[in-house]
Amino acid sequence: MEPMKLRFEALDAKIEALSQSTSAKAAFPKRAKWGYSAAAVGALFSFLSVELLPSNAIYTLVLASIGLVVEIVGVIVAGISQMPKTWPTFASERRDFARQLDFDLPHHLALVEWLRTFPLDQREALNEFVSYRHERMQEKLPMLTGSIEKIGALPIVIALYLQFKDMQWPPHPSWVEVLLIFALVFGYWLSVMQISVRLRLQLYDKLLSKSLTQPPADNAEDKDRESKSTLSFPF
Image 1 (tube, helix red, strand yellow):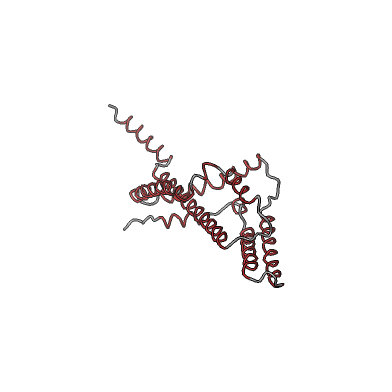
Image 2 (cartoon, one colour):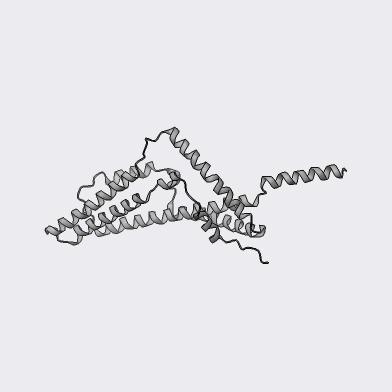
């Protein structure tokens, strides 16, 4: 009988099928996603109405106002859905994180045990390959994201403040500025996607490496056999 074939696609499906705790599901609820999406669509609709339609027409003002209202409502819905039910404290954050770890540990161990059902040579081959790809990803990712995770978020906030402190409302950006803004947003989205792939590669590496180690119960049985053989055949 041909042994089972271990594939990264099957491992990824197992990871995606894992249930999430209530706190993990509430971190970014579906209502917040819809709210931010509506806000983005409303802002784009309002901007295009102002830029493409005659500025002295009444329908331009009406359409731009509708887009602005949709944007404001979307931000309000997203903000309300993400508001914590209780005021967060250091103790509560540590307690919630500990609960999350307690919830995730059995699923992590179950994944490792599932990987151990496959032949050893397959696990070693996948582990060696994913380690190589993870190292390559770490080398290539700074070409896109730079060192933003090393310098922190504070310099970025200061740069944004200096960029927009003299901004007037309503804004009147040119088409070149609009294209640059969309290019920046697209680059940020690509960066987030690449970071997500890198984190998933890191998880593959950790799970496969753990599956290559011998379970504690087997170690105990091996030690017991060694002690018995030593007692039976002294040298």
